[in-house]
Image (cartoon, rainbow, N blue to C red; front, side):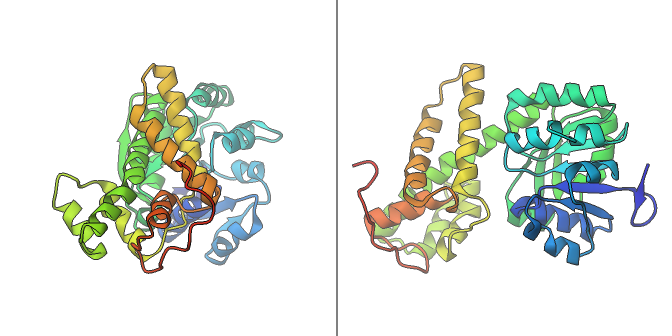
Length: 315
């Protein structure tokens, strides 16, 4: 086993250093690991290089040098490319290494990843993370994990550098479904948040009191606690409508596979589709709240809503 840092730890790598991956990488570095990093965008790894990470020119080179490789990618499409195309990381990892997939992706991809890992003599671990970039910075993420005992034993010390909870589930499919379904709950709540906040504000409740009211009531939720401060200040850009749209599609795929109708999920997706059409894929995830600010002319945050151009999507 390659070692790093204090001479006893495995060599660790991360592929994908965007908002979540970059934050995770800084946590790993802060805990004393020697970290290798790769991202197809050179600007995404510059700050990590300055912090002491070894930057690899390609994913295969990085994988060959490490014992635990984390994937933090936008979707299963990028996971497919990194793992299987050209000099994919599955073929580059040394036998006995662990490939730990933090990405939220399709459950339909998992069987191929597990089988390829077995064929290559490496441990594939499904480990999508939850709770947002701000909690990653605090080391307070939750992760839904599945894999072999050996793979999880390799992965766990690294996961604990940025996760407060590691919830082991019975299968790779269960671990990914846990992330997809909990994200669906997030989006359903987020889709309703604008209506709740603006209705209260227009009824005479001050914007700064809205969160206190919700937290003290049966209307409380993770979204009320985590996202209202973002709306009141300015919309957090670290999770985009592009990613929301991807995750809502994954939820629809999972529901179709399981034969479960998603009435609330479909309603939330319609709200997010409206925001996507108005603001574009790079807009913040809470843009449905912003859209309702514009439609009603109601100011929630520090910045007044700009005039709405074009027609209201539901008109």
